[in-house]
Length: 152
Image (cartoon, rainbow, N blue to C red):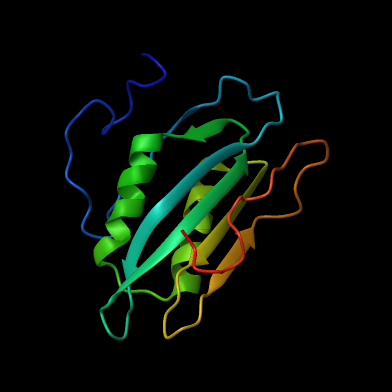
């Protein structure tokens, strides 16, 4: 059995899940579990729906984590995030829910998610969540997303 033989999505054509709950997040063994390092995923075109109006909402997500035994398989993460396109939820629910789902799956040393949401009703809403204080000794770069001034 290889490190990826248990994966169900990688290397196959698969349709996006109809909801975040139905989406399958997969993990692979961390080849460096004894090393503290930061892995970053950036999703600058994240979309979901307003739960009240059904109108689309757009965000720039930045997910940083310090792995322990597991890494998130990136195709499954992409498909998971895509499952929000037809999902109605407030910005806070989407951002924190994604962070918690990843933390539950990966059991990382540390994880944070920054959700920079484009304006709804003229007000941008930024949501930040993390599992704990970052581990000592890691290099943690800025998320790279500026405060709102016509984001792009």
